Length: 373
Ligand SMILES: [Zn+2]
Image 1 (spheres, rainbow, N blue to C red):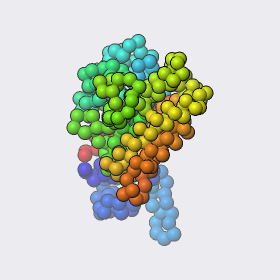
Image 2: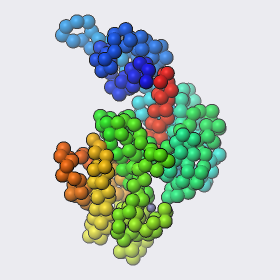
Image 3: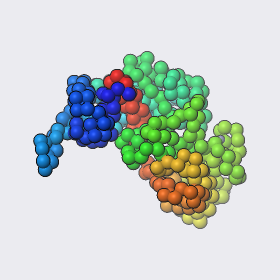
Image 4: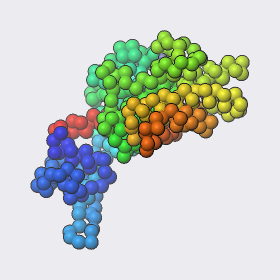
């Protein structure tokens, strides 16, 4: 990594930083640092934001990222409705909208994105990020397989959107995108290694090791929803197996189990309400699902020994009874070897967090090429 890229990375990570602190953190000379700062500043990517007066010596000028230098667009693709946001370089959403698709036709999605961009004209847009649930070839921008959500196979959505808009477009698995957003702007800002487990219709995980996203050899890393948990699952999983975590602990599985017990169908939009109105049945079903999920989280904690594990449940499963079951199984499953105890936290879902995650993917890509690497 060049000195300029390192300097820019440190300035991004810390809100405000002086050249003296940059010297201290990199071990580089004053002239090397001031040269790199000057070059990054001449690009407009950083600016001076005041000074720090210490007891002795000259006041130190503080540098900060010029967060509004440019913007990225983030889209969370979903069957019924996709969220789209415009974000500055610090992940602050400055404009958002919802896209209703009549079927998920790539050319139509590209058209919708182009329309959104025309509505926010006046902003310099340096990248587009798309988050899709499924297996993604991030290098080529192709959705290889998204059985549970959008039903795509080998769809080159990245190139289609890039072609229509003329803007670099990145495609990423949604759990990976969320993990990246948490690392850059969220709860995991200070973690070196962590895992974000997403829990909705499907179950996935974004794995960050040493502040880098780990996708695995073919993009399958983190597909924990298809781990066998050896229990009577609610249905045959989309992958063909019958003992998947996803078929036991996803919101779809929980709704299935609930429908069976109550003898009436429970549509997704009534899941939370029904669980709250039927506390005894809910306790049973959430206990069973939470125990399976907690055990898998304990395996992740043992395999990766991360700083923290974050669980991001969809709104309908953001329930104390569920969290309790997950936490109890997690704690009893973690090896006593993990002496310091792995931090397990639950993230509350917000409306645009997924789209913001997608925008983060484009932000990260932009900074990867903003200065000579
Ligand atoms: Zn499966």
